Picture 1 (cartoon, rainbow, N blue to C red):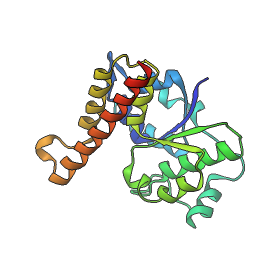
Picture 2 (picture 1 turned 180 degrees about the horizontal axis):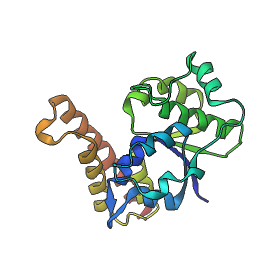
Picture 3 (picture 1 turned 60 degrees about the vertical axis):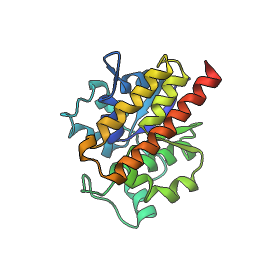
Picture 4 (picture 1 turned 90 degrees about the horizontal axis):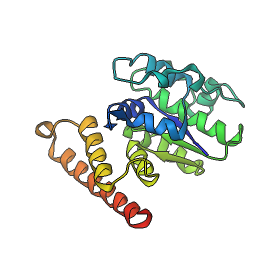
Length: 206
């Protein structure tokens, strides 16, 4: 059974620009999951057609409609106001994706939903309390996608999985010569954390 994933723009871009066997990781995830998003993310993806995104991710059928309330009403209830479309630093795409995730679980009655985002400002900010309120929604980054594909043996080896994690870091971070000491330390810890998770998968499933 395919996963139900609601994915944001930055994750689509990151997974589209990290490849295995000359295919983007987004393609492999799409083979294993229903990839959907809010209308706002559909608009964002349309505005980022220069980011090497595969054609399939733009399909209109991927746009989710909320069932219980309108998206504007959900925003008003959670934020006290409606976020204008494409507002700079408004996180509307991530906000609407999360609200769509809640709607899918508690009104459409999906068994499970995975909310995929690489926006640390959102996950460490507004979503920190939201995700605690709706624990049935799983939160992944692109790094968890690599773990999933490795556990499913779509990525066939530990070494390839580790290299894909490195590729994601390289794509999403400043080049080494431009990294601050703080950023370097943070990335070192991130790599160590995911290397250990890949090792755990290898021990149990291989």
